[in-house]
Length: 287
Length: 99
Image 1: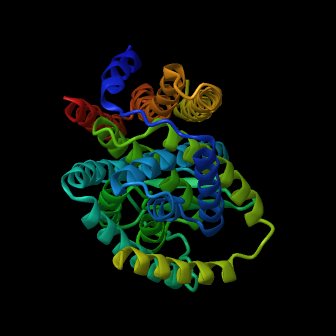
Image 2: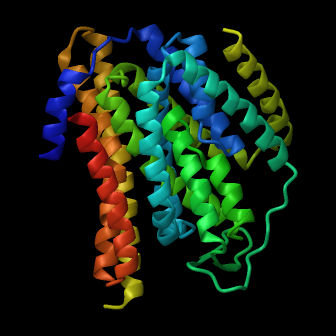
């Protein structure tokens, strides 16, 4: 019934622009590229998809963000379905952090509807530079080991590669909740997942093993993204044809990326990507 | 029933919801796009794609709802309250966005 109700409202909200076959393939290819590279580099893919949609496809910034945030739900959902079975997701921790990411995402989503596409593009350019710096730092960062100190929430999982049972307790919960608020806000405002900020925070501040941190972050991202996706939907920024094409590409790409990541070394790729990010940021600023 | 088997059941359910959401919504989007390729002015194509996108957007809500129910069954009231807060924020925001 809820679906029927929403559907009735949405049918009036969404402008339907048909997608020709050529655009479909282009959008699918762009999504495929973003999904594959995103999974290889440990990013959601939104950071690649948005520049593609604006610079290559010529989509207005708000529509690009709306498309990306919906694609982020898809990749998170597909990843979380697998991670829950592997027991790497800490649902309790995810829910606690979700209280701040969702609040941040809602604020970010509403803020985005008030800002012009031009301003959002500039802010997105800044985000690209920040992410490039983060990736450079991450490539040489050593993940911290679990702490034995008593924490607010505990977790345990079996590492598939080593076969060891990993036990951990969550340290400095308020600090990670604050980072999550910021990550949620960026997610809602710019249509990206925000995992690149949450995962290092969970690992370094809370001393959560990297696998559990990444899985929990991925689990949260779908919920965070859904929070702002409805705001973009309600404002008519989601074009069904464009979004469907891109999502199918991103989903397929993320499976390819996961499969490829066990076969190729991503170190050189990371540095090439940092260069590309800075170049794209420059393009966005000088547009 | 112990708390741990309840947790496992909840995890299985959440995993199923996620998988089902992805499969059904992708199916709707693929069918919609195929229909669009053959009949460019079809409203059915658009409706199918919108349904797919909506189902995809609703999966996270089901995921949070399942978590709320799971914590309730476990009588873990602290986390029940946390999950409920997240769910209420999401519902409140949707209602506000569309009104």
